[in-house]
Image (cartoon, rainbow, N blue to C red; front, top):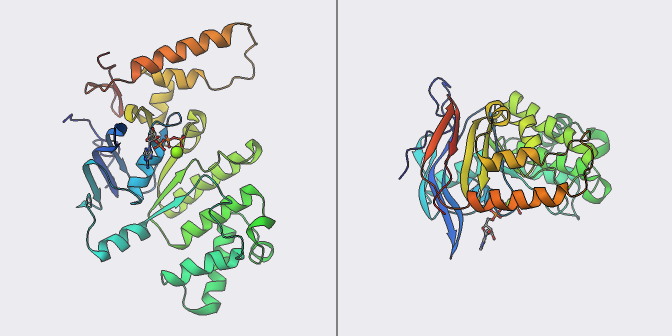
Length: 312
Ligand SMILES: Nc1ncnc2c1ncn2[C@@H]1O[C@H](COP(=O)(O)OP(=O)(O)OP(=O)(O)O)[C@@H](O)[C@H]1O
Ligand SMILES: [Mg+2]
């Protein structure tokens, strides 16, 4: 197919990717959720997957976290081909290495168990604590590492915590497994705006401290710029623009990326009657032009690529 220079494998980056996707597709009947996704996740780096609802972000996350398999394409884990299910041992190693944080912090915690229980289980299951004393110390250290007070939080139940605190517990639970890759699918979209930044800062700092490869999924390009060194802008299952976040945000080439950036709210812009109707017409036109499949990739900088508009 197309020879798209992959993210994270750009010359000079010098880092070996832990997960590599090459030309991944995923179809659900007639719906082509993913069309030729090629990207790499690298230790200590965050990659943001950005795009509107239905563009294929979760489909991609599910393939990376092995909750789903691609229709075609190739997937490597530490350089090994894992496109189809391997031995039980390889699968176990993969599932341990790749942990997810979901959008809904409440749905992912069991209401009948304490926070301590939620964290003790993975510690014991994965052999990171032997016995009660070690598990207790492990729980305390995990809670502290996500900015929660262990003495107050450990014995609480999920409903006794705020949304932001629950999401921190979910992050702690993922960390309990000592993963190498963290996939965070819209981790702040159900949280109050005022506490989103704290969660994004936490994800950034654990990525740095633990040398984690982070896949941060969002529809909000402004937060992508905050968290990730590299960005992939997706539309209708295709990567339309990707590369160094700064380059993509400061010098966007694809009309859909420009549309996303122009939709970021600017509190200083005056309200002009009729402007929103004009914007919506423009948005519809950009989306129509961006939908057809295109194999032509252009380069804007050493690590900045974009897809030309396809045939209508
Ligand atoms: N299991 C499935 N069966 C059928 N269609 C699916 C399935 N999962 C996803 N799709 C379709 O694939 C496309 C991409 O969906 P996906 O959930 O990946 O989008 P998304 O970018 O995560 O959207 P959102 O921002 O709303 O979460 C959509 O058209 C969706 O309807
Ligand atoms: Mg989704």
